[in-house]
Image (cartoon, rainbow, N blue to C red; front, side, top):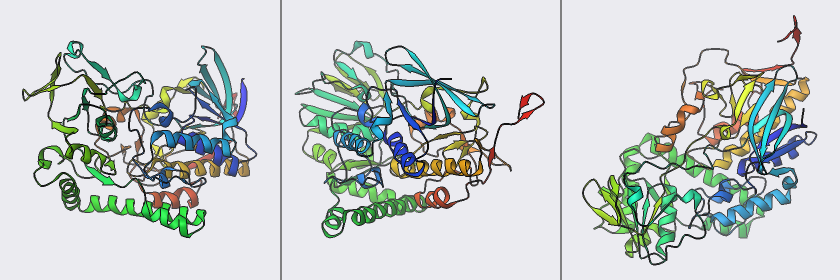
Length: 489
């Protein structure tokens, strides 16, 4: 059968480490292991090594509630975040449960035994088998082995180097070079000012603008509260301050999009001066929060533009040339290095093959239950964070809910728990964001319903009430496999 655990967690990033803590805290009698495909934990923060990589959420909400962030900066660099995750895993003994170099390739649910049979491919080429009662996927939502790269014409003609930031290596040298960063999302916004410190010039080339907002890397309120109050009280207050402010702004953007749009653009104009062409370069075609806002820490991007070390070009790429990139307008942008910050490639469940009694399970045909489980799929949950707030806020709630579910199963003497739609639901896409990477990959994800518990809330307060205090058995079937006429029912 393979080595047995009560719970197998897949992925050792923010979600997986959080799952380990909650399992130890709320289900101490349950055995668990965390399987990580890479050779070290940390997830996104171990993978991304490009210059300037940093959080696009404040660390008081991106950090764990059970281990509050203590750093001076609320907007932290990637190295500091990775150190925080590793410190958290060591402090709570979670690191002893992490098995690196083990990629889950398939999992088959055995109805008769009420277990998942999990197959792992090791980094040394071997295979290993596990069994578990509950499978908790903490794998994120994008591929680690491939980023999105459009098929640009003439790429082979370019004399310089083309790199994707997801696969940045230490040998990449941009000192004194002309650099083009293709994209205008969170990755581009962090890359451009970092590269501009040593490059001859950096051009951010975008097909269309994104909303950007400058924010200090240090939270003055947080730092003051931590001087005046005990650490736990200060951290709790700051976390709720940031949650409520973010939710207020998101709701305001939904209710009064034009007013928020004008204010965001005016703030950029104030940063760049009255003569700057914000209408072309910083006025998006969509409403605020139809895509995630880009956070400009300490206004560093705007500073680089004001000082002439960076610039923005808005247009459509015609082709690469030997010397750079030609736009459809005829304008040519010279470059020695091109960085394609063109986005992620979405992937559900890390691409593993799921089945039930040998029959394939297609999660895209299911309906999401409370944003973390799947209709008609037993003993399986995923940790999927917010698109309009910090990822970790939803992670904490999801992990705690899985523990509630495990304890309810034990209390009722049940080995199997399955979300079941017991009344019609109108199905809609899982996410309502218009970002390109979401549109490209949304078809492989489940749908959501128009009503609870099948609706995916992008609201921390509502999820707090639902996941922590709501009914555990609403449209959830608790059962034990029983023999009927020689078959398992």
